[in-house]
Structure formats: structure tokens, C-alpha cells
Length: 358
Image 1 (cartoon, one colour):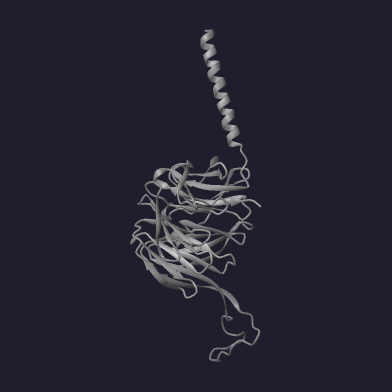
Image 2 (tube, helix red, strand yellow):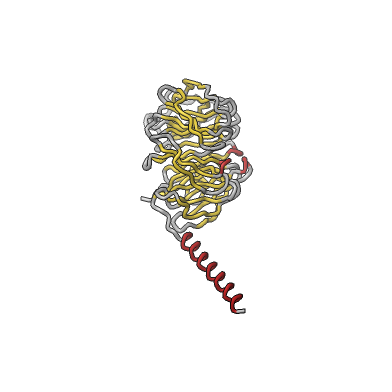
């Protein structure tokens, strides 16, 4: 009996030690600069220490998470709960205390996907509603919406001055350029009667601010895109025909279409210096790198069986790539263009982002 009791005591002690170890691991504080990575299979957000490449916490988010972005102060993360246009929620994570907060219900703005955090507000696409919207954390309300009228308004880029918004519309094969502009006063002058001829507004009359949309046709199935660091060009990866479209943002015209043959292309990102363009495909195991100046393929890096999210790391001269079919995030050296490691953040990784606290 003593031996049996002893075995149970040893086993219990071992479990207690293991429990304490897990608790200590879970209690690790969030680094000032953190890598955020989503797992679509596990419905979790992993917080990764970029110095050690170790996962320090895994926090629950909603079903089918696709994209993640952090607030400007690095204290909160927002996750789009996509559901192929069906769901209508954004998960919220407190990164400091490592706790899930109540979801944001986007209501009729179903299918939230692309995210940006600019000007203290969260901007997002609503694919099912064919719209772009903005959420104000201070008032906990959606304070702006603009429809695109396009099918599958998907990824999103908002300029720092909040005056231009770029989106890809996957099924329409277009890019939307939304611009905030000053327009003349709208409506007849006060006191104007029917039949009277309208006169121009007097000098000094206040103008009104409004948004305009320019649609640019690109390749079929355009999804991933990025704006060059100098703000002059927008490149899209067109999944259905494997091409790349290049838009001159000053003239708002396509200046080149490259037959890249990257079928199933998913994401596209410029390197911080603007010299190279990285493209992933969910159907191919190679990361395709283009030279931005010559517009020619520069190199292919084998990373697995397919990939989605791309995140540049200027501080560490690395690139993180979510290899969705292979269930890991691979690390590529930005200088040698060689794979240097991988991170297990959960099954089917996708969206990646940085969270930086001042």
C-alpha cells in the first residue's frame, strides 16, 4: 500500500509542478514589442516575443479569424471574424493583461476582413456589405461608413493623414481609391423659391468635406496588395490569373500588368526600402520575390506548401510568413533571403501584425 500511495504522491507532485510551470509560462508579461499571429484552426491569437521567437500567450478569439491589427499604443489587438462574409464581429484582446474583451458587433456590416488602425480609430472592410467602415474606441461606436458597390471588398490600406483609402475588390477585379475632398456647398441657398435661378455661393462660403471613389480595373481575383513606401505605386496580386497589376497613384491608372504566373496569390508586401516585392500563394510552396524597379522576378524561396500573411520586421531584418497549410510561421532573413526558422502559433496561421507600446 505504501508503494502504491508513494506512486500516486509522486505522480501528483509531478502534475503540481507541471501545473505551476504552465501557470508561470502563461503569466509572462507581454513584451513592449510583440508579434501577433492568428490561428484559424484553433481560434486563437498568439503573442510572440520577437527576440526569442517563443509564444508567451495564446488568447481566444472568434471563429474564422483572418486579420489582426494593434492599436497605436500597442495595448489592444483587433481581429476580424470573417466567416466568408457571414459573420459580423471583431474580437478585441487586451494585450497588457492578456485577456479577451467583449466583441464589437458590426451589425449589418457583415464579413469584416481588412483592418487598419489610423488616427486613433479602427478601419475595416465589410465584405458582405460591400463597404468600408470606421470604429471609434473612445465612443465604442461605428462613426463612418462608405459603400464601394463592389463584390468582396477585402484588404485595406489607410494613409496616415486619413485622406486616402485603398481596397481590393476580389470578385469585381477592381481597386477602390476613396479620397476625402472639399466640395462646394450642397443644395440651394436659404430662401430660394421654385423657379428662381441658383446663384453661385458667395465668397467665403464654407465648403463641405466628402468622399469620392475611383474604381480601377485590375487582374482577376485581386486580393493581396500594398502601397510602395514612397506612396507612388500600388501593386496587387491577382489570384485567378496569376498576374500582378501596378497602379500609378498620381494618375490613378494601371501602368503595367506582369504575367507572374502566381496562381492563388494571397498577399503582397513591399520590403521597407521599397526595393523588393514579396508575394505568397496558397497553392504554391514558394515565396516569390520581385524587383520593384525592373519589375522582374528576383528570387523564389521554398517555404512549404502554401502561405498567406506576410509581415516585415525592419527592426530585425526579418520577414514572417504564415504558412497556412503547414501550420507554422516561417522566418526569412531579409538580407540573405534564406529561411532561418519557424514558429508554432497554432493550426492554419494567417493574419500577422506588430504591437508596439511606447
